[in-house]
Image (cartoon, one colour):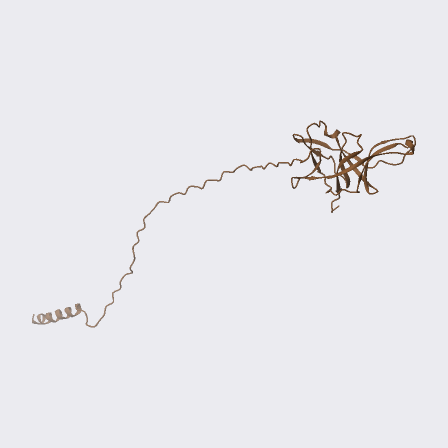
Length: 230
C-alpha cells in the first residue's frame, strides 16, 4: 500500500510532462487554400428576333428613247450601239439621157454624181437601219424615195434609172441597181427603213423620186465597206 502511494505522484508528473509542449519545438499548421466566392446571377437568354428579309424590288427596265431626225425628208443612219443618228452625204446628181445610134439601139436615163466613193462609210452588217422624218403628207414612203446602188464610172458614180430597147441589139448593160427595203412607222411622221438583206460592199444613195421630170436630184449617199476580218 505504501508503494502505490509513492508511485502516484511520479505518474502524475509524467502525465503533465507529456501533455505540456516541448520548449523550442515548432509546430507547422497547414492552412487550407483560400477561395473567393463569386456569386453569379442567372439570367435567362433573350431570343434574338430574326433580321427582316429585304423586299425584292422588281427590276426597272429603262426605256430607250429613239433619236428623232433633225431635218425632214432626209435619211439618217441609225447607230444602235450609240443610240444616235448619223447624217449621210448630201450630193447632187444629174439625170442624163443618152440615145445610141439615133435611138436605134435604144435609150437610157441614169443619175450621175461626182466622185467615185462617198465620204460617209459604214461596215457591212445585217441590220443596217435608217430613220426618215416626213412632213406628214406622205402616204406610201416607198413610192417617193428609192435606194440605189451606184457604180464608179470615170471619176463619177452612176446608176441606170430607165432603159428602152431599140431595134438593134445593145450589149451595154445597166449600171447599178434598185434596192428593196421596208418601212415601219415608229412615231408620228417618223419612219424606220429596214433592209431585208445584208448590203454588199459598194456605193449607195437614197433619192427622192416624187418628180422625175427634174434634171437634178439630191442624193443622200453612203458607202459600205467589208469587215476587216473578211
